[in-house]
Amino acid sequence: MRLPAEWEPQSGIQFTWPDESTPWYQLDQVQACYARMIAAVQRFEPVLLVCADAAQARARLEEIASAESLALDVDAIRFAVCPVNDTWARDHGGIAVFGDAGEKYLYDFVFNGWGLKFAADLDNGITRRIFFDHAFADDVLCVDMRPFVLEGGSIDSDGQGTLLTTTRCLCSDNRNEYLERDEIEAELRQAFGLERILWLDHGEIAGDDTDGHVDIMARFCSPDTIAYTQCTDPDDENYAPLWAMEDQLRSFRTREGKAYRLIPLPLPEPMYLDGYRLPASYANFLIVNGGVIFPGAGSPRDAEAAARLREAFPDREIVCVDCHPLLSGHGSLHCVTMQFPEGYLK
Image 1 (tube, rainbow, N blue to C red):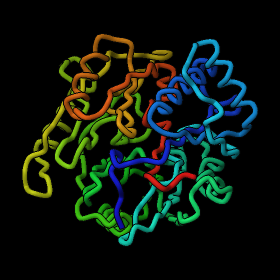
Image 2 (cartoon, rainbow, N blue to C red; image 1 turned 180 degrees about the vertical axis):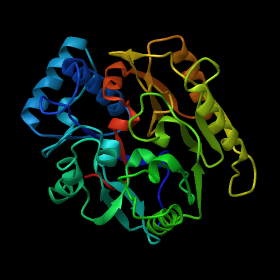
Image 3 (tube, rainbow, N blue to C red; image 1 turned 135 degrees about the vertical axis):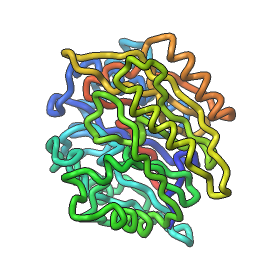
Image 4 (cartoon, rainbow, N blue to C red; image 1 turned 90 degrees about the horizontal axis):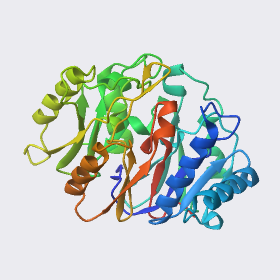
């Protein structure tokens, strides 16, 4: 088995549409943000949109595209109708894995609302539902991974047998609490054909309610490069945990025994909602065919983040999308998307 890297060729990106039944603040702004993200992705590859009501989602997207003059091709979107609790496709979406002979597997892990924090009964059924409604190619096999709990945002792969993850999330209560860390590692190694797992024991961003998803802290950009969130303000509450994480990243080695090339991404300026810090992070970028789309924070640090990402991805176009509204749900661009490799989506 092989868990591909996100930078490998893709057949499309899944979004799950926010509507009145989902627990979003300022829904109109969130839907407009989704339209901007979908328009950005469409410049590079197709979009699969899971939604409870396709006609309603289509009409709203057309309305936003007209109002904001977006280059959004609604007719090119593949709609998949399915009841939903929420819209975090990264965590309820299927995870694509290749077999030794090129077999295409779609792993359907248990999604339990980030350790039973939120309702997830409907979201936990999305992957199976859209699979049996023929959203995927005929040679893709959906594999039921119950009872193991795993969210896509909690892992990152270099495509060559190395996984980057966090102890705090994967070993948290209410996920796989019946397993010790070495047993969790064994499950991951078997499922994904892994040679190594790099466990981050440090790192935390205030406002995060996922128990430390790696996709807001550190990400593979190539087999020898990791981009990570850096905090340089000693007065910031994120300073100590992120510096501890950086120290650990320096200790990691590639398969060849060399230190990783580490590219620091600035921490966005603090943002709050009702007095609570929001978990903004430039590490929550999405790699697409020929590009990298990252969530803008509307500050001068956006330009610094873009420059760092160009350093990490010199052969890809770097695109910034304003994702402020998503932070009200304590997530951002990578959290609401799931990529599928070439040959997976119809």
